[in-house]
Image 1 (cartoon, rainbow, N blue to C red):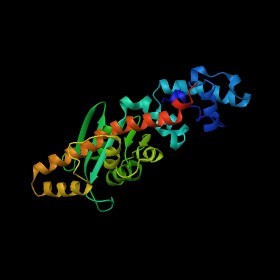
Image 2 (image 1 turned 60 degrees about the horizontal axis):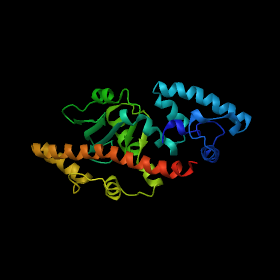
Image 3 (image 1 turned 45 degrees about the vertical axis):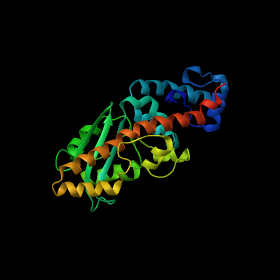
Image 4 (image 1 turned 135 degrees about the vertical axis):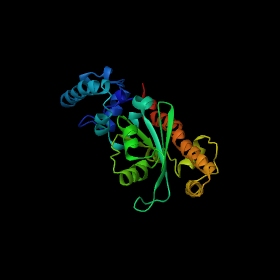
Length: 248
């Protein structure tokens, strides 16, 4: 599902009105006819389409992030998928007031970069990687990863953010990332490793075990790269649930 299929950003247009438009054959902005709704609503839709078309051409993801309900943020994904930044962090604990970020992996444009504490992980490098991101994709990143980075490095992680934990819940997929990966059939090289192992591996590295760092980086990269497969799967399922079944 693409942003151009959406009418709920328009004031006064809720899910029921949007669904009626879809069922009547108006499934794209280009197909809208004022006669499909009342005069006031039609004026608002036409004004929205005019502005939204320009915003979309300009790649203004923030405009649509603000316009769409948070429950519909997944609709940004198809339009901004190719330039989205999938990210995941590892830490030595759950509270940024005492714990450290050990690794941060960011996958964008098919390339994954892992930043390591004490090497290249810094506020400056994070800002460089996040500076022009149209869409962040994470799992539980709104509650954990993003605020952890902000507190630890004094940066703002304020790009539009698709946290897959929430659309997964909408689809009845519960548990942690690895459980959901198993449920939807996504494989990883080391399914035996967990967040606790990530802390243990970092401590081993601090004691001089470079192989432990290699394993930690591999684990963090798996978490990050699998987010793309999960986002593809989730967005497809949601598309089928809310859009494909109402097409005329």
